[in-house]
Length: 122
Image 1 (cartoon, rainbow, N blue to C red):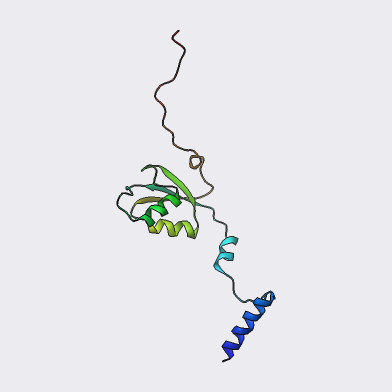
Image 2: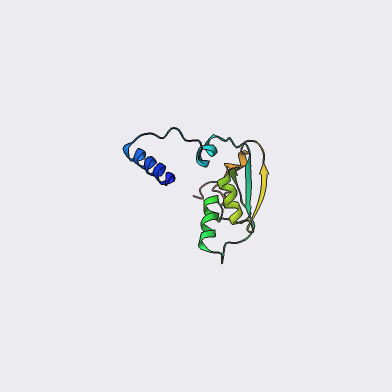
């Protein structure tokens, strides 16, 4: 019964707009915001997404994969990225990269056209 009374007291305090500043716990979101991650995951897709469930394809897209097999992407070492990697671990290759993100992480692979215009014929 005492538990029920304290619960109703908390609910009434929350409804009245009183701030509950006497909490003795922290949420995982507030702890995750204060942690600084210094490394990155280098993620390379090694298998095709053909025939896998749509939820797995969505996870690949959220990691920045699914466009071209063999193209690496870089993700910060966070618990969110680690959970996504665990979902698609059979389809990717992972490398830990300490320090800041390398310059190749910002570049997009673009094929050359194979020809260029030198001048006009006439």
